[in-house]
Image (cartoon, rainbow, N blue to C red; front, side, top):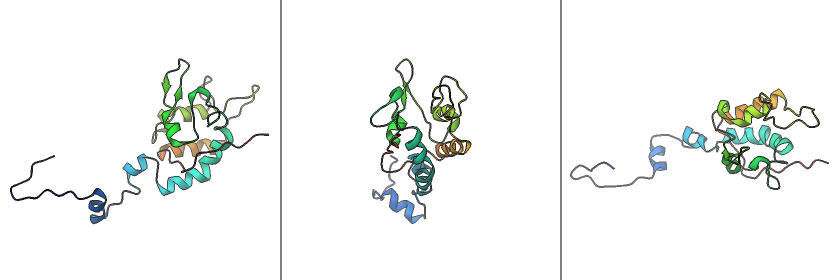
Length: 156
């Protein structure tokens, strides 16, 4: 902290008050977006991403099962990442940067060693172009996530 000039009193003004005085909102600021909590991002997540995760991801990467040590049912779990073949921690998503996010590489099927969802009986399970575009946009947005964990859609 800097030194106070003679005669100045020390006062602490809460950041929210300071920002409000100057008309600055933290609600949609980059700092706020970095934690994945912004209203537009939450709407996008609920409409586009939650269904993808529920239908194609959390059966194998959820509360009951965590293939590769990866759990995707909450933002916190997703950001923890998984484990590589040598059991070392592996980051799966870099909020704001789809180019560095393994999840985007995996859904694009550009690497034979990591294709998600994985092919079944040599039949591709690759997501649609629209779903891949939405996931990429989601990562660019900072990986906003809903308040409730994603539950797997039970397959019959």
